[in-house]
Image (tube, rainbow, N blue to C red):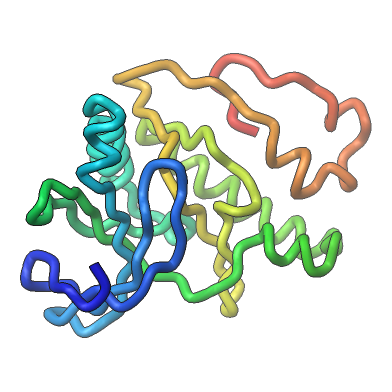
Length: 196
């Protein structure tokens, strides 16, 4: 994969990371002249899942490519690679995620926490306005840019409400700002279509 060209447009430079469903690579967009991230789902993963991973992959792109918001990573295009692999290209963010910040500093101050939460909330307003639910909100999926921009990434569990119902998670409370909430709020159960 490294060094190869995809769709005569993207030259793969290096692997950035791998998850349970796909591998993300850094690539050069030789047409537009900027760097992108490529999320690649291998043929082996598709076959091992009986095709379910591919359906999720395509659904993820379809649901999230329609979103246009500064706090949501931009998705560009999707396609199939020779050999049966699938990919989609997205905005490359050479910046740390919140998880690495918390590992290093253990805790962040209230002012910075509120700055992050406000931008996450703005992104979720966009998600919900479009009928999309992220469902995997956690520090590792929150990127902190040097200019102060906060960006949500990794839509592997995103769902379109027209396709399936949503289940809520409480990981953000556990990892991000639980120490700034009253105990009654921190332990409150989320139900229905609530995301935070």
